[in-house]
Length: 85
Image (cartoon, rainbow, N blue to C red; front, side, top):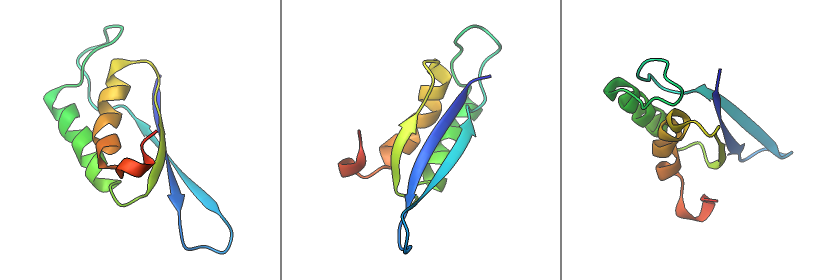
């Protein structure tokens, strides 16, 4: 099973804290070795990006699988340019 991990920095606390979001890839075609996301999976990925758009994401980690990159892409586009690795 492959996972996508998104880290967000939580601001406004006395002590530095981090929040880690662990997200499984969105809906994909079949079980081939490296399938694309389905249209529904692309909608899910876009919704994830919107959901996390105000979360101050500082790092996104994915596996090498295409579907994890496709799932993370909308969230990465929602990051502020100064925070992109």
